[in-house]
Length: 107
Image (tube, rainbow, N blue to C red; front, side, top):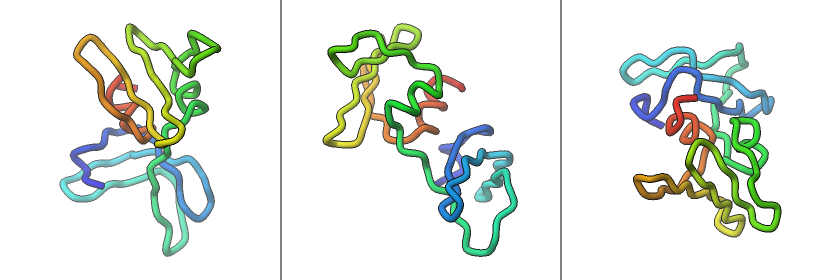
């Protein structure tokens, strides 16, 4: 993961404890995360799921289809491919992780 693709506050999971942590510092090639961990810890991106869409502010708009809405955007969850695509007035893109969603919407 490159620091230039991250922002302060981006959410991740610590691989040993499962604790949600966030980016608190970005410097050239160094990323600093919240929390104190033992040796061997690793920050892992959080897969973007329906649960995380809700936690990040999206709301389900139709129960018959996995479609979520947020500020003129539509999200479709493709469970078989473990990805979510977002459609905006500028087109669409695939999102795989919570921090990508956060970056797209400045959350």
